[in-house]
Image (tube, rainbow over all chains, first blue to last red):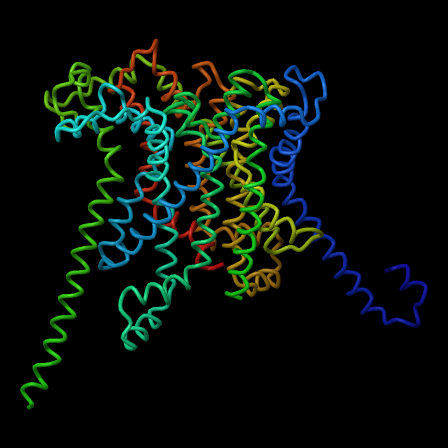
Length: 313
Length: 295
């Protein structure tokens, strides 16, 4: 820029050039600083998330000793095994039913808390959030003790009413139910706070207008609350779907995949094959099966977030 | 005639009030049911941790109450005769390091992404949100290989290395939201007064966005404190173990389940996040739900 100004001194006004060049330098400097400030983030994201994610695709195409390239061999081996199909089935049952009940309980409790006088809301919200605050591994340990085969405190109550003991974790189907129950218990409060925040953002005038038009509580819910919250419900459900699909703690601690591998989800099966049995490539292949469902949810979440941002302006 | 007219609205108001009271009573009734469901496990953990081994093992007594007197024996055993304090120390070190790293990295990045445009910054902001959606259970196997390659396997410093993958993307996302809500006029005023970028960040952005910083710090703290997948995969000796995995696996010795001590350990391990929530819950919830309600 300065060179040009020197070459054509008569054609361009000097002060304008100087300020123009200065501005340019400023912008350049500003963007350089901006980039430098992002650099630590880029290093972490690229080195510890993107690279491992791509590396796991390569890793999944090696043999157990990681000496030979086997292409899609690990994937086709997994798909030929009945156990793995059971893992797929159980992951789907686990995630879909847990998310459904979490969303339902979250919606109901959010409404109940919202009904209370505003003074008591904080206390109730705090109390209902406790499951979500305790680190999941530790509360799962508490649940495991509640389900203990000989000392189960639930069975003590059931026996007190004259019922038969329930084999919470030793019968495959009860075990499946138990791990879902714990997941619902842990995850419902997250829905509660998201919905509660959403409920508070619905303008009060809408309800007043509906009340004047003679709408009852159910009609107000269906025609005002649900449409206003639709986007947040969608984002929360999709987000929870990802987290629940990827859940590891509950199944690993309570059943470690048993009885008869029937409670395994992708994460625990990948852990069993990859870390416990030392077949890292096969484990990587198992966890990569999570990728399609995650990608689809992510696309929809992103769309929801953007749409929401546009609506707000 | 006038009497009826006066009577009618009163009756209507009375029925409305009755309706409202009825709604309140049903709300409380169901909330109590849900509270019982949500609080049963922590209650039972507390009860068990305050019993003697003999009472825990005894099958006939009511397990839901403490029949033979409260004892702190389980807590004494936990601190005196197990590796619990080692796990606790390791977890504190790891968590403090991860929180510090996370906050520095995400505040710098969020400041830059919300105010300084550079090539690719728009895509980067979206990309960070996407990386947050990649779960640890997808990354732990390739990371195992990487951590092993670095010679950090079975060292809690590997946790300091890998936990930021759980915390940095979301904290950056929260901070971008908070920084973007700061009016641009404030920066302009600062620039006119001759402040540099760093001064602007330290003197304006950080103080104004303090609620967001608190929310992000709590998030980073809870996530690092509760992480389970990475330590169970990468750490295997007691002197390197962290609280979550240590309590769940290593306190169980030779298939003898000392349930009282286990519950005491789980409760002590869960106490720091619970205390933080008790005091700072509002900040945290505001930070988490800001994205949902604002956009």
